Image (cartoon, rainbow, N blue to C red; front, side):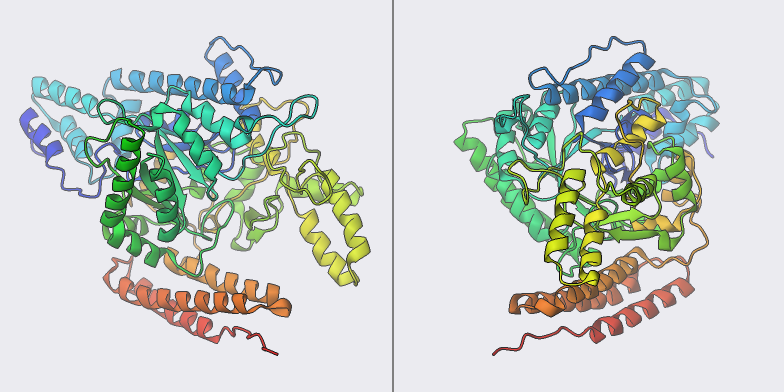
Length: 624
């Protein structure tokens, strides 16, 4: 490699032709939120390398445990925040986020001061970058620079370009449980779970984003107006930004307008596959990922203009500071991405700013918390071990893995005639079928009551068995999704359940084993391949298959009680799937696929699924 001058090195940075690379994001991927405990401290592990990740702030109990763990590990003062204290939930969240912020900044500053030597974190920072990054080119040129003075200057240039990964947080907007005082009196709504979590984030030192997922919550949206950090300051800058996780353009527009009318700018729309993702699934009406991304690409400028106009007008009415110019709005995508080519196509063709790689990072202990038993099961799981379950107390389909420790515990309880879980955390208490105060459908209290009702109301053993199966499948996700962090860091308390729930996306079936952070990043950027030997279809086709199966299942569920409205819905769903196939036929022609054989297989698969969709019979309601 030729010697490179300081001026040339700076010019290299300034003339970056990697057009879809966001200037403040050194990486082209992010790690989404996973469960509760899996990514609760991921920023501490990866942010110093410029990688963005997300902390769930739903569970103040595990958050307080992790704050204690890190405080003791780093010999920092730890003052517990008791449940008996006023606003303890929000204060716990604030305290933990401030601690994470301090740890990340300390690690980042230490990294910046390191010498450039093999194995040093500062070298890993640049080695992890995509090969097309101008910073990586500059880093590689530094090693062969023979002029000592120029080499030192390049190193200082590199240090000045380092960007720390962002510590983002996630709230499931509708998980906004009402809380009560010690006497059973309902507390004001500001102490509801989502409201308190928002307050905890708003009061923190973080300069980052809050990601809102799982539906809209007008009450929560209004509460944002109480905190100045979500609005522009004197310089038109926003300290805390808002990200909306959405599954289609219509949802983005509706929610975006709702927030813009309150003066809140959406800094990012995070598009997630409705079915090919981890955690809960929220199927669209047959709209597939490709057409959805196309709609965002075609309408992005209109979306920005419309939301900016509404937002500025709202700020003016409030007599608040206005934006000096249209602030950036990113479009990102996640759900089912498995190869470098898929990721690159999303970035280049749809002009998205980042691709989310979630479930594969469950196999990377350097980035996430997964206990030994669950990690072993994920590392060796077969395709048939991943399935959509009825395990969530929210009543929403939930991606799951067979034979987890949580499921084994459920079976043990059923065998002992003690179904259900003790409900300690109460974050998912939404059911009022049998009680005045809401309870969780995974709780022992609810399941006993529901099973008694089924015994009296079902007319056959088969009906009882099927309905009771759904009741008994509910897992205590509050405990199960949080406990991995406690187990990995050896901070589990005596009363905590040790059974783990896990919610990987079905795409994880194509990854086997455990990986280092470097191995996963190299796979993402195409420097190596870590997929297992299973034949894997393109992510678009994998999602298409899931939607076909979903439509068939939905039809079978209601076929005996079909309404005209449902028939119209199924007809529309089927039409959307066929339109999606036609779109993919054209799209695949311009894709850079791995091999010509892979292309032919993709085209054959599209024809196969087109025929399968055409064969789906939508039952019609007979009008009397």
